[in-house]
Structures are given as structure tokens and as C-alpha cells.
Image (tube, rainbow, N blue to C red; front, side):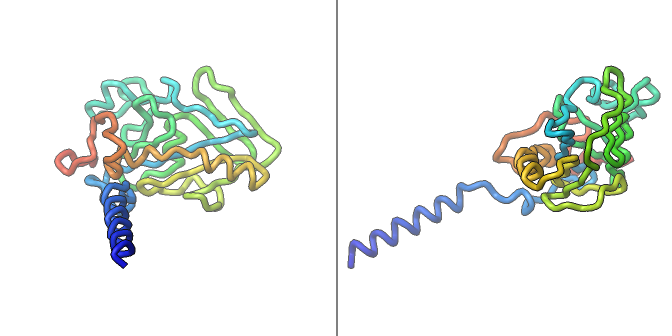
Length: 206
């Protein structure tokens, strides 16, 4: 009887320690600045994941530090919607209401039907696959739209994969770095500081 009680006590202590030490769910932690949101995204064409980490897609100019319009400095990137920090898979939005279409337009990318188009220098131009693009939001398929206003920590996949098995593999490779920039998974370490830090003292508003 005593041995049973000791065993139960040890198990309960172990479970309590595990519950205290395990990472929390990022969705239970509030973003300290809801005007500064982030989402992970990926674009796959014919089984290959496109890489948006090239400097051409990054937004690291002086205008990023001041919040001024990039066009005034000869940059095409949107002043409140961009990629940076060498991370080509996390969209940063510093102003509510901006859409996926706004983001892709800012980096001169188009996704329409079965075709992917890039007008950026040294890009591949237009690539048209055998199958139309599909869009997945947090693992669930939805109609392809550029009007979607993403929410903090969304995971968005565009792919022309025809089989569900291919889609499953691509979904498994989605990144989940958005929570670091939104300060909703502190156990994973701090992300590089931004010009508009997710902090109520530095509101990301126009």
C-alpha cells in the first residue's frame, strides 16, 4: 500500500513538473502590440519551395528605421508590410487591414490560376505549372484569394501540388517563426529587434 502511494506521489510530482516546464501555447499569450502582426507563409511550385530570403526581397533600408515611405528612397517595398532580418518566410505587418495581395505586390510577385509571376530583378519571370494554385490557411484549404487579411500567427501555404500527400508534406515543412516576432513564444528566444518593436510603448500605427 505504501509503495503504491509513493508511486502515485512520484507520478503526480513528475506530471506537475512537466506541466510547469513545458512551453505554453503561443495562442494563449497576447501580442503586446496587436497592430504589429506576423504570419508564416510559403509558396511551392512543382514540388519546390521558393526562397524569399534573398536581399532583393528584404526591407532593411533607412526608410525602415524611420517609418518613411520606401518609394521616396527608391525602394519598392511597402512601408508597413514587408520581410526583413534575412527571414524570407515571415511577413511583418505594421498596420491593420493590409492584405496578402498588398504584400505580394510590394515584392513584385503575382499568383494567378496556374501561374506564378515575378517582376523582381534576376527573377524567373512567369512560371506556369500543370495544376492551378491552391491556398491553405492553418492547414485547411480555402479558395485562393489575395484579399485575405491575415491574423497574427497564421500559417499560409500556396501550392500547385495536385495530390493531398504532396500538400501534407509541404504543410509539415511550414515554419512557425511568427510567434517569436510577436513575442508570443518567449521560450524560443528573442527575435532580432525591429524598427517598430512589438511593445505598447512603440505603437505600430501610421
